[in-house]
Image (tube, rainbow, N blue to C red):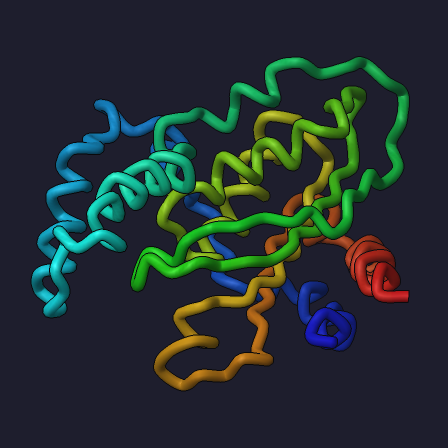
Length: 224
């Protein structure tokens, strides 16, 4: 499995290297909700134009309601543009626990911003608390907000790690995301069995090889 290759790369982190984009100067403005509401009428008109442009008849029975269906679909799959992921991290609980917390196999669906085609995958998220913990469902909710936008997997990985590190005031955060990109599996190179793995390590997970190795071993262990 692709995830197992990360174990071999874990030693690279000891030298300050990273896997993925590794951007430290994170732009927090990317997390803010978009201004204005979603213009469904504009989407309907655009979809109708696309149907005409590809040579279809948007007035035939099977396509007559397609512009409206697509508009409502975009409102659903891109709803994260108008939500603030930090909302789900406002409530924390004081707890004397300084060991790793790991949530494995969090399923998500996003859309590649280059082709607007689906990205389906799962995320593995770990953090080491610093006196406070967050409710178990909140991290998947944050992932939902961040993924329901036109995205790049590299950016999604970084955004999730940075957000949790800051909002939880954690000692460390580790995020590993595995995704299957439709833009690569149903078009272009048509590699249906390919997967894309990205990671972001912060704090203790970046500084300590043993902690990194432990989390990667626990994640890969989810495959049985």
